Length: 147
Figure 1 (cartoon, rainbow, N blue to C red):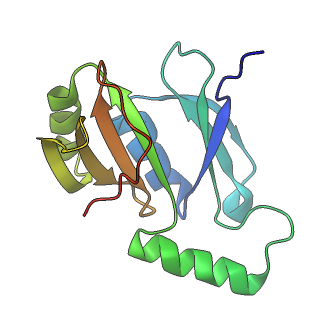
Figure 2 (cartoon, rainbow, N blue to C red):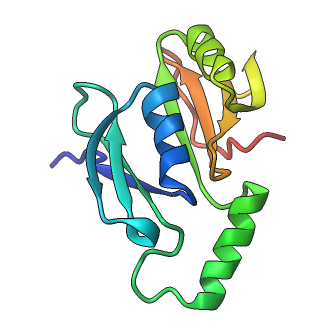
C-alpha cells in the first residue's frame, strides 16, 4: 500500500495576499477558489503537478473551533508560530531571488545547514513559515524552525 500527500492546509488572513504569494510569487496554479469573504478557500499547487496541493483557508475554519481558539490562532499567526511548510526546488538560488524580488519577507537566505540540507526561508503574508530546500538532498526529519 502506498500513500501520497494529497492536500495540506495553511491559514490565510487575506485571500488576495495569499494568491499574490502562492500564485504570483511562487508560480503555483490555482486549482479551486470557493466561497467568499471569511469562508474563502483557495487550492493551489505546482503547475502540472502530481496532484499535491495546498488549501489556503481562513484560520480556524474547521468545524468545532471556538472563538477563543480562533483568537489564539490569530495571535500565533501574527507571531509566525502557527503553521509552516517545506517546499523543494532544483534551483534554490533562483527561487530565493524570485521571492525576494516580489517582496516576500525573508527569514533566512540560502545556506548550508548543519543537518545536511541547503535551504532558505520566507514568511507568507499570513505569517506562515515557508522553507525551501534544494532537491537532491535527503532531509532528515528534524525541527526545521530557524534558530
